[in-house]
Length: 75
Image 1 (cartoon, rainbow, N blue to C red):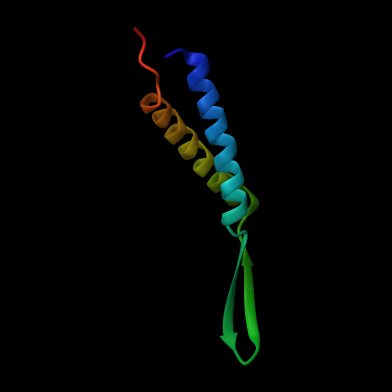
Image 2 (tube, rainbow, N blue to C red):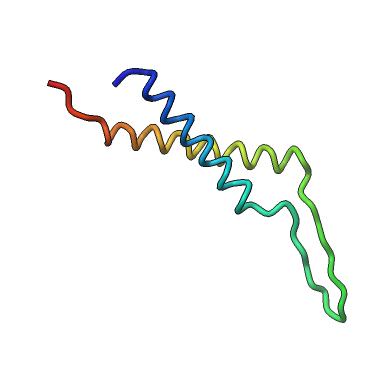
């Protein structure tokens, strides 16, 4: 398998992981304390960015591993 194909699969996985992380990871959390009082806490921007990039890298590596199984057999 050539490195260009591996890089393309990593890039696709990375972009897919970025999209999923931005959609599903909340930037804030709300705690209901009772009597109509709620507290909202926000993640630090760098903490949020690092978490999103971590998930994107993991998804990229999973795409590379998946590309090895999807490799056509050469004769």
